[in-house]
Image (cartoon, rainbow over all chains, first blue to last red; front, side):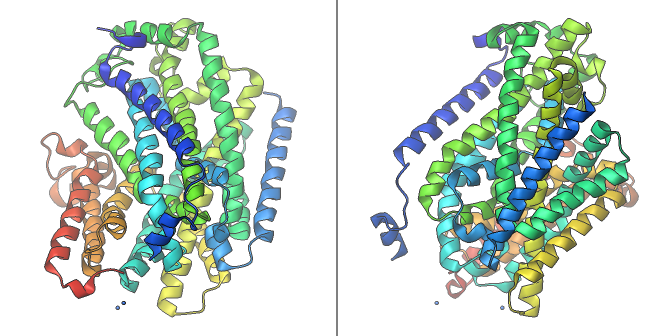
Length: 51
Length: 517
């Protein structure tokens, strides 16, 4: 029954695949938003804008 | 291992910790510095500190042993730790928490909840829960570290425990969160580097690559002992049989319990408030993900691969050679790795313990110091009271190590994660995403989550209920419901829905004038 990379169970194979996809997403997110998120950003100002 | 080299490595390590502790102490001028590192922490330090706090020695030694025994199913925990513990936590919880924490001028997690909902009761209750429940989690790590020092240096356990506690106490009490996070960054870097070496050397030692090693492990499935097969074990590269008792334990306790429980850990939530802007959090996402992937992903993979190594060298699987799961990884390191790496790995385990413990002590101390004592007595906030709180929490954790049985302490991590998630997660989530939530709803959700969590621990979940013995004394049996899957269902899975239902129902049935800030 073994499938890719010698792993017997799709349940384990998908776990490794999800780990890989997660680190890819984190890398893309990091690149995309590397310089975004300053409190001075327009978006932040909008967001900031009574027992 | 050469005693002189071992002593030299430890001496350099302790001197570096001393330097970082003093650096933290000198930069700590105010309560904000002591509690939130002045909100000026570098994203690398923040991400590695978050990861090093999250990954304790129990995750490396304990879960590595679990992977050796049960296989690669725990890789799902690595995925959840990365996805929920970093991606979801940083992007969907962290950014809003940082912004709101800054706006509310909150310095601790209980203070964040209390100020958001405009309720001192919430702040005091949350602080008390942390101070009551966290010493159990700290005792797990403290005891594990002391036992490890006892074995490596061959010194008396009591002396090992005392020295270990005093070293951490010095830089936590003195350096505050700056001291904690600087030392975390050093300790996390040691953990990261040694894990990469461990993986590469393991594949070199067994003489196979990733795919070939997995194929070999798959073909060893017939060697799973009958006792493990009976609870659902189907081989080291397969998930347990669906619905078996091991499947429930793996999925509800180890994967969901720890994977979701991380979102409401007070010592981790406070990290979001230590950075200057959301830009730092955006930059920390990849660093945090990479750290968790390397530290946990590698040890779980290597844990399973130890079966190939012991098959090649001893002709038997890991658990047949070493019966105690907690000793499989240390034994494997000593047997399969170069002598110098044994010393480095010893530092890795110490680093994992110390980085988790220092944050636990800091979180407990700030909870009792700022959230309970300062809130109740209305005294002017000062770092002296919080430092006293940290010292008190260290003493309490130290006493817990001696007073509780090993059986209870062994369940300490799962108990704390479950209690935190059931008590805090709905109120924390709603503070960020549901403006309609009322303060009564948040308070009663926390109380009911805490109560339901305790009930599940005492009467429902066999792992804790049988050790505590209260159900046995009152009912004459270990658990209230013996029909599967109740005895193996994690307490968080039972208690979290209770606190979620309470926060929704009470919010919808209470006046809008009590809406949170």
